[in-house]
Image 1: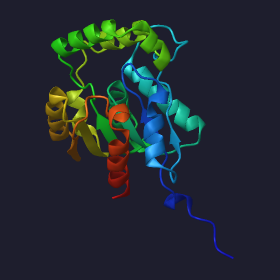
Image 2 (image 1 turned 180 degrees about the vertical axis):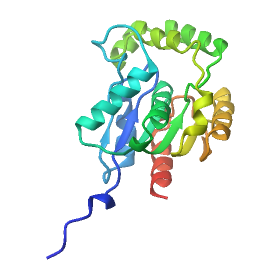
Image 3 (image 1 turned 60 degrees about the vertical axis):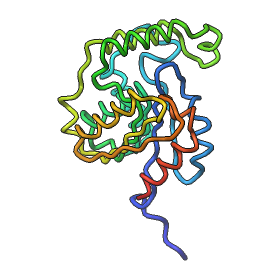
Image 4 (image 1 turned 90 degrees about the vertical axis):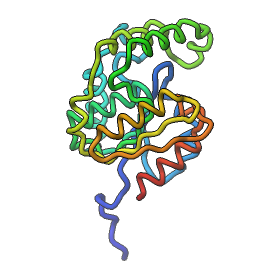
Length: 220
């Protein structure tokens, strides 16, 4: 009679953290493209849930994700994060390194310039309300994230990240490609992959390409 598989041999769960202006449903195409074989979860982050009070704190969002994983009995997971989700994943890698296996990050907001934040605020104000409702997000909550990050600088903590990291950017996002290169140089174990033809939100614009890169990186 064959023995039961060793839990240590099972693939780590994959945690998907959505970006600014998105909800967990944004990962639907990525999950379909990635396929079976690994448990996945796409949680809301604290401060972005529809019934949460308006306001955002990066540390609280990271702690909320960690608490949810602990309730599920997850001791270690791999993370894919986009935009503010990538920043939350990095915060976990700094504060809870035992919980983080590998990281796939796109558009992490580590030290956003005031000019970039102003552009994002303007872009957020121009998004039709109906589109935000369809995505399951609210404009005040998105603007609160940008307000919370206006004086944020997480670069000093990056050198303490021990998780192997793949930093992803879309070729159409020139500022994002430059930021990805800078981030990879600040992390002890990181490399960059650019997705041709993609913009900043690679999980929706290039879900299959991101899934293929994630697969290859996590299985290597």
